[in-house]
Length: 305
Ligand code: ASP
Image (cartoon, rainbow, N blue to C red; front, side):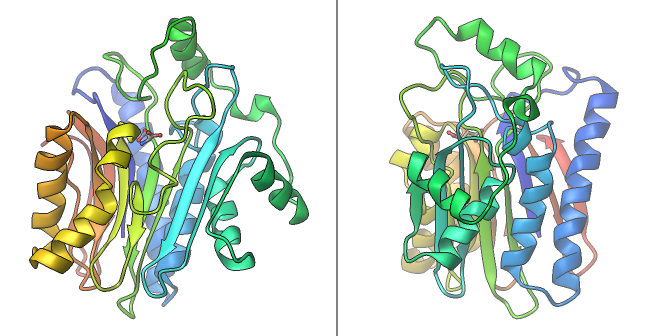
């Protein structure tokens, strides 16, 4: 089981030790919740949804509750989930008031014939399932409000985690391999601060920010979405494994440390294959991340070392 809480300018010393502990505790909790499902013989799909739900409910991360502000001062969230066994996928974007966007993405996958619903239509679908809507206060976060205030009258839009000061960072994601060797990926985000005109990032786009295929790998990305879309990043990792015979580690590193950089993007990804190998490359100063394996290896990291 591997999870992330966003990549970006995470430099040692810029965060108070208390904040650092809070992030680590949240990552640990999400990881353990997902891992417990795998340990009890549950599916990779359930594990990634559960871990992402936990991170969505935490105000520390830019997903669900902690989502960043759009140029209009609203929250528009994106999410996706994919099952590597069946290649079934569900995605949602431009939704507001939904507590757990990744679960709505899963409902789209399981309860409709479609893969991707957006905006009004996605909200109507949520209503048809009796989703309860949270108020804007639920999503309000003072730090993120200030981030938006700083750039709201400009054409700038920015990664939640690109400010060189203490911040609350991060799109969230999870990938997992279950006891049957099935893998899955899930990603959820509030996108980029000050985004305009119904901007959609890579996170909900199958193949860009999220992808899973038992034959190759399950991937969840974080970073400057525009570049991850152009690089079709998650699928590129899968393609390098399938067509070039690269290992998970080689493919993930080739994409993040070479291909994404070459087109000007920054960020990272987490990935797993059906043998349980994992990779977590990032080309930024840091990435909130954690993993646990069935061999008893476990790590929670923020910075490069
Ligand atoms: N990739 C996300 C987006 O562009 C942002 C992030 O990873 O924080 O919407």
